[in-house]
Image 1: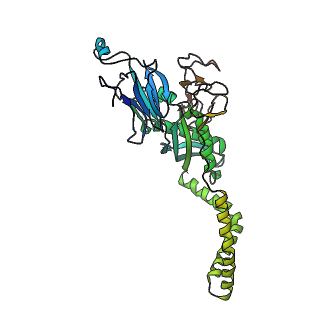
Image 2: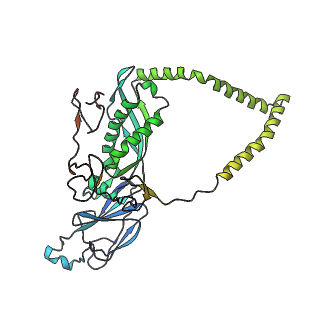
Image 3: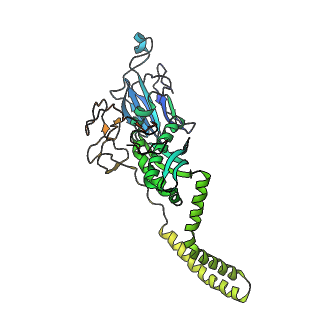
Length: 378
């Protein structure tokens, strides 16, 4: 039931039919009037944030909630008559989807510059995937969603791509001296880049669960040089190749009906039961699903493990429901704060972008290398 009826109490709930919505506001257009005693139903994968008089009041976890707090006025259409049936005491509910959004794509729209220690300046293209979820609903609404009635992955994907590409350029320049070191290091690069981006995403209340680099593509002539170097480096593993060939020859001999093959086949027949017994024993030792633990979170201030639904840290008292963060040190700020209580930085001051002194390209505030020319920023 909606929020526009005159007599009956509302039952406020939301279902994500598209599978791509991060946030959905009720009512979808503007704000409405919520009656005292209305029901709010929140699913396991959701959090509902109540806004009243333009400010976030509280966040509601899974379950059925009856709205009877002092934040909810006793409003009906009759009380709205002096305001032409539109009361000035407005309220709205933002439903935040907490599920994991998989297979979001990132990639370089234009090649980025990389200074290779052996090859000089090389233009690279890179592509990959990443998975995100909302970790701080109120912070996410206040910093990214604003007053939008619907907010999907399409609305945020383009900005996150730009952040990933910028950090990828810095990370590659700091951890790879030459493209000849790329083979075999994709997983390490992906993990390091994900850890580097956690802080950037966390400023908006978003958690980066996984990030994968699926390809780093240099020009064709550079790719050929990398392939040639990889073949040379594979030569020390010829011993493993010979051992594998010998094992395959023994398998073929055991399958032959001849005398030697029959003997080897009999030997394998005696060995197989023991191998199966060991496999079954290992499965029994590891069998049984581990009991599911209650979801945990980490306090961003003291770094202790706390219950996932805690609103305050039981160790240091730090508030877990984040309304805003300091752009300088990342400290969680209370509502309407003017300055950061940790570093004194103005709460509404954003870090300035960094411009390359060589080509003049604009980069993110704490970028290390220029995305356009690969020059290290001073």
